[in-house]
Image (cartoon, rainbow, N blue to C red; front, top):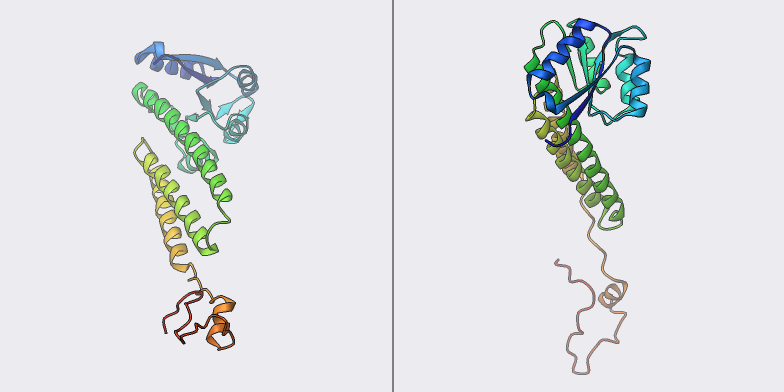
Length: 246
């Protein structure tokens, strides 16, 4: 790995800072570069002047308490994964933080160096994959807009739903192969199942196209009003337009 993984640690407890430093030194310390600040306002300054691969956030800072810090980080650096360190094992807060965009919640009282390193690596990989898939999704959307004039409305709708379903299936399948909490795995599985059901429902509900009407000249010939195509030897005139089985 050529480039070091740059980590911003936002933590005001000296003992927790030392624990993170020890954890990073446990496994190939040359792979990580740690930048530490004790206040959220200092973190903002660091983010504005430096680039980071991952942010580790404490929820109990002097100038930022609770999930407000997660929201502000996601607004500032939506492409950088955020890992939360907390001393309170609150499942509801963890779930809400993940919904806001945090990659993972770790309990300070029980997390091991090995778990911390694994979480950092998986969080960065998941975020990279998410960004790549978002770019792919945007590209598909543009392609669909360009080709929206081709085919019937029902065909276009089914094609869009099919592409969306395939994309969501790829996203969720990849996420399920990574390290996830039980709640995260349940949410991703539900999204995958719902996506497939939505596609099936749209496909079954797509209206059938009405048969095309025969061209005007064909209908006039059928009514006996057009004799110009009749041959001199009373043979039937050549077929005009579509042949409709009766």
